[in-house]
Amino acid sequence: MPLRRTLTALACCSLILGATLPAHADALQDASRLMRQGQTTQALEQVDRFLADKPKDAQGRFLKGTLLTELGRNAEAAAIFTKLTEDYPELPEPYNNLAVIYAQQKQYDKAKQALEQAIRTHPSYATAHENLGDLYARLASQAYGKALQLDASNTTAQSKLALIKDLTSVSARPASKPATEPTKPVEPTKPPVTPSTPVAPPTPTIVATAPTKPVAEPAKPTEAAKPAEAKPDPKVEPKSEPKPESKPADAHADVSKTIEAWASAWERKDVKAYLAKYARDFKVPGGVSRSSWETERHQRINKPGKISVDVDNIKVSVDAPDQVTARFRQNYKSASLSSSTTKTLVLVKRDGKWLIQQERVGG
Image (cartoon, rainbow, N blue to C red; front, top):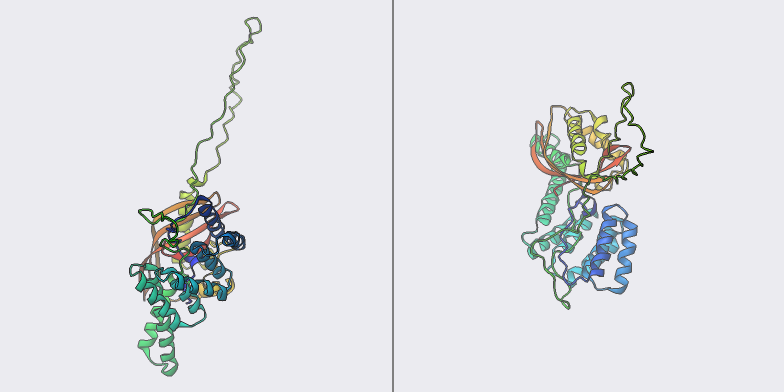
């Protein structure tokens, strides 16, 4: 249960970096868009070009650190986040992302200290609180496992360890999320631009509009050349107008059906149907292989006893013609665990079917 990374499982934090000129905002928003589309290398190249002109820009540096983390270049990312904590100690996100890297390296004491520092700088920073809880769950799991090594008959430790494993497997995600962008203005030499409410980097909104067909007015024939009015042949059925293709904004119903079928397959323990709802390029949490993740899911879903998986309040937002983000409430119940969490899925359309490309708990 490694701490959750911010790019595959994190909700994008707000861009409240002050003093952004239009070119500044456009460059980094374009890089963020490439990052969300999975084009991490291209996004990093764009950020590097931006930082060549503005090497001290905190937003650009932070985004670069996040991209390096996504690419597995943790040492370089840690150096960037460490320098940001020195330059801007009031920002919680660099501490949080450092904690993610430390946890991946199993340096749990350092991860705990970094998360506690993030909370001290920003007590209402929910991400750091959640990550700290996940870290404690990881440490508890290790402690219970050690207790069972020393005393295999310890039924209390067995029950507690099983409870933690069930809890951490419900979401099928890594346990902690870094942030992608700082939340405060960080360029004091320029007039800050502070929106009244934190806003995420804008996502293009696709609005479905009915296509309008130009109707050419027929030429009026002269009286002498006016043809006789043609009568419809009753044996020939009139041709029906082709139905317009469904628009991305109309995907809610299809996506909802996919999510409900996914939950239904999970509940009836049909592992084959359950795994078929995931895209081939599904971003497996925790950095494990796809085959290892599928084996783990197969074992957990097929554990003895009935389970109940219910989803409600599904909300779908369109990111691109073939990509949507769905958020809903997931209610899970088994013999040893009952939980209700917010779940977010990123789905892509492949060969006419909506498939899960990313999965995370939270927004």
